[in-house]
Length: 144
Image 1 (cartoon, helix red, strand yellow):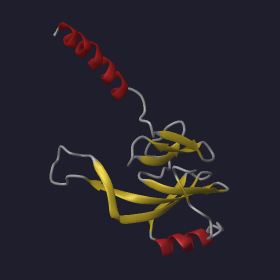
Image 2: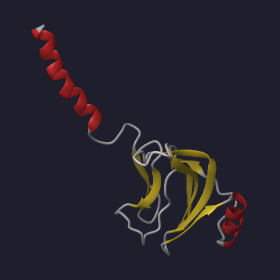
Image 3: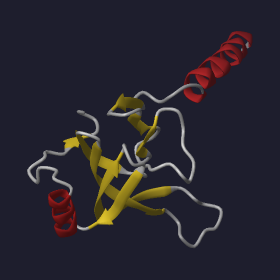
Image 4: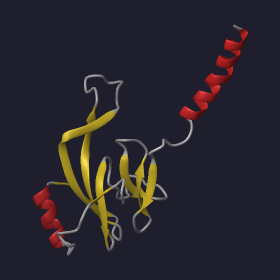
């Protein structure tokens, strides 16, 4: 019995240390361009932000970024919207993917300007007006 108590006493702190500290196994950041990176802090929190932080005056592409690519000073992304898991529970603010919401974003890093919430047709027109090739391939953030 004493051996079992001793094992539990030693095992609980060891297990809690591995599960509570540091980034998760699949968390990452990937450099894009002009001091911007893809930051993944959870399965649903994947965003594009400056490496040195941001505030409400700095252009970002919010979560959940699915696919991305870079053309000159532009970052182009496809994003899936998020919704509250339990909209009627004010204490539960966790967000999950909204399968009904996908949109496109274009971030101009040289002008600190972002255009977002574009539907596919509007996105294609905006690419054309900005002289970005309309056939630019968006790459899954996990493969970029």
